[in-house]
Image (cartoon, rainbow, N blue to C red; front, side, top):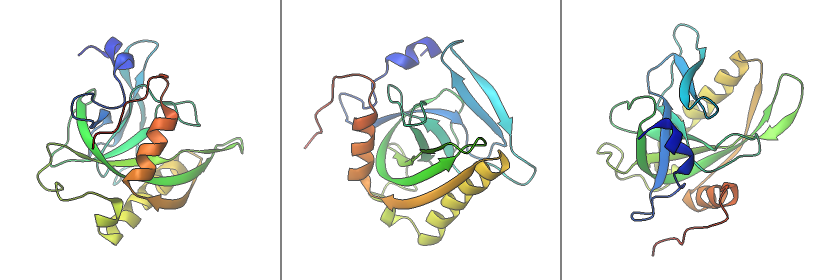
Length: 184
């Protein structure tokens, strides 16, 4: 798949109804990568300080737009890290609702979806964010708080919600008017 086709991907795979996630930053990386649709490539967006790395793969849902103007963000639980630009089909398990304050004081919602790779072995039992260990949920929130603090922003978690709320967020954020039907 070429980067130019990323914008044509639907948020959900039409056959499996799994969420399409494009990995920007692999788990364990200090480098933060981001997709640049204007140039159709992934570029280095920043580097985390020594001792800090992404706890899981981090990416976005194609054909969506959040309140911040960017595609919806996804933290993706997998057995091993993927690579930058990899398409991973995933199961939504929840969302961390959050308010982000930019350096200029502007506030906006910048929620983080949580998903599990459909091919995952170690996390295949997870169906809801509530199935995650409470300490891990706190660590994930703390990562986003710290990550934004380093960048001069404030990330304020507002709550954690399950897969239904996550799916609703994706549906509301779709840039295409065509909405997929949820499989039964």
